[in-house]
Each structure stands twice: as C-alpha cells, then as structure tokens.
Image 1: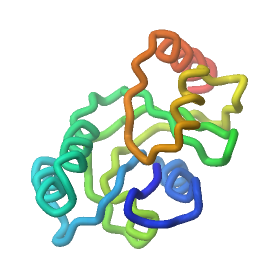
Image 2 (image 1 turned 135 degrees about the vertical axis):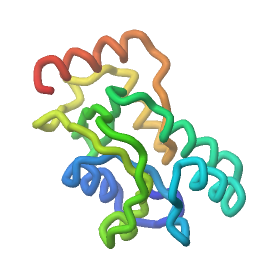
Image 3 (image 1 turned 180 degrees about the vertical axis):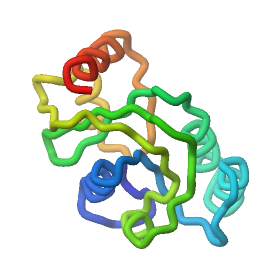
Image 4 (image 1 turned 180 degrees about the horizontal axis):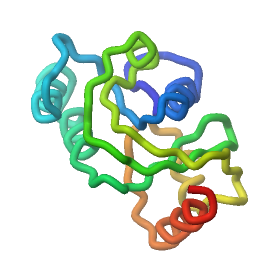
Length: 151
C-alpha cells in the first residue's frame, strides 16, 4: 500500500493500513466520491484510465479475498478483505495517500521471508506501486496456509 502520487518513505501506507484494519489504494478525490463507480470514473477522467480500472477492480473484489502487504523490507502481512469499498477522508488516510479502503482482518503477527510464498516476495521485489493479482497456484496455496495457522 503505497501512494502512487506521493513521495513518502517506504511502507508508511502499509503500516497505516495494518494499524487501521484496512487495505487501500491511492489518489485523493475532491469532492469526496459517494460510490466506487463515481470514484473510478473520476480517477479515469482526472488521472488516467488505468487508475480508474484499478480502483474498479479493487472495489469489486469479493469479501474474503486475501491480500498481502509489506511493512518493512522483509516483513509481510497477510489479510483478508472483510468489507465494501469506502472513501476514507481522515487526516491519516490522506497523509499516506490511500483513501480508497476496504476493511481487512490482518493476521495477528508479522510473517517473514521463509514463511510466505516465493511468488509473493518476487512480486514485491519488482518494486511497483500497483495493486496486483498474483496468478500462481503455489502462491494461492501458500497464502491459505499462514491464514489457517494465524488468521
């Protein structure tokens, strides 16, 4: 969870999300949107089509979807989306640039490199700031395992 348009220290957005029990993506919108459809259309118009599509995909994820983030270089957190899209206009969310959020239940402890699927680590190592799906059966099985132990 990193804002695409803010130059913040790494992991600041992820720490905020885990502490607040949310997963989120960026781009502040004014005035505050009332629906994910309105937000996606605004992002497509004011930023670019890709930003609008990414938000629409994020908002459409089914509850129960697993999500990964990284709160330090080799410290990962696993969560599960537990609620619908909402726009968080709190000072904290705006400061870290992740106002589009979904309630998330995070595993109660940090996970380290040897505890996570290799494909998850590789995805983070590419360094992008995008919300991405990992298309890998081993990653899916490896995600369910820590959730079962610690979720």
